[in-house]
Length: 244
Image (cartoon, rainbow, N blue to C red; front, side, top):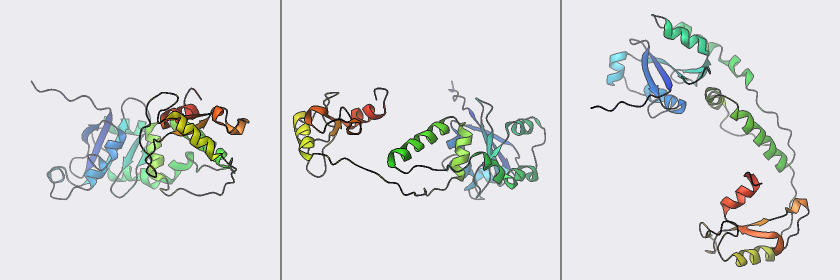
């Protein structure tokens, strides 16, 4: 008995010249748009490919997540994805005659308007901690977007990050405290008691990180009694985990 494939949640509609509304599905939006089996792969097929011969050249691809009512994405060859309203997709799905190219092209004619709700962030940071805090705030904002909105922003984002000048201050650490703390640990994390995950390239010593129990920024002393040698996982957890 042939095993049925699991239902894939991402709806995929390829608009060819001959087959105007070819139905498929994918596991994720990235796959549906991507170069392996999604829209980009379909656009790259040569004219003598069996799929193109049968259905005609591909004009557009529309994808959306069937698990929610978020807007979908519409893309065409050599063009980044644009947002398409879910009610328009539902209308196209219900019509006997799929939409003509002129209707689908209209989403690209008005694409500049789509991005108005996704402004470029205005940075006010002047120090590295402030810059990190602003990044984390933008991460939290991104988590509130739907996947299609996030992919749309990625499609229209500048791949080269902007640069700003920031000022910073640093504590002049006591090297003896670092060395003595690491020697005391004997290659084993002093929190989880697991051996260091790898050896340093410079001297083949076990890689552990020296952490101040009471941070220097809060008046903690730079002494061996205020430091522990930690594996990278434990160190990151103490800074960013629920135990922070």
